[in-house]
Amino acid sequence: MAVNVAREGEPEAEGAAAGLHDLGAGQQFAARAGFRVLRPGGRLLLADFRPPSSRLGRHLIGALNGPAMEHNPVGLLDDLAADAGFEVQARGDVRPHLRYVQATRPEIVR
Image (cartoon, rainbow, N blue to C red; front, top):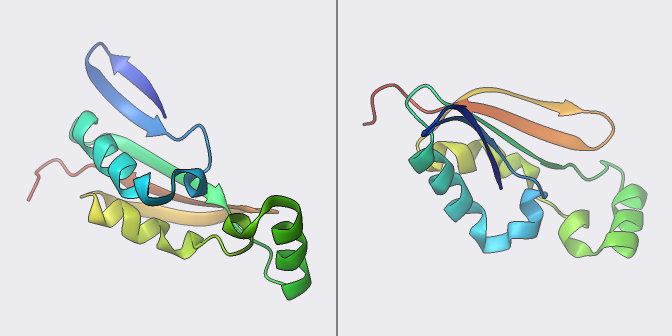
């Protein structure tokens, strides 16, 4: 995980250097750590591999890269950010195979 610092001691944005699928059960820990280190108003970008929509495409990805890639649950990125305390601002796909969620740490933590 890499942290970009706007001013010393005040991380503004965080991003995962590896795909979230590589973290397995550590995904929630990583999202919570991002919430802990970002200042209020800080931005988080979560991105991960989005499997192909076709059955053949998923099968090929699974054969080449393993089942974690074939059935990667990128639909849970919103929940991952929200469960850590972030407010989801945007989401989308970057073709051909990337899903992202942009989120912000609230100014007031509830």
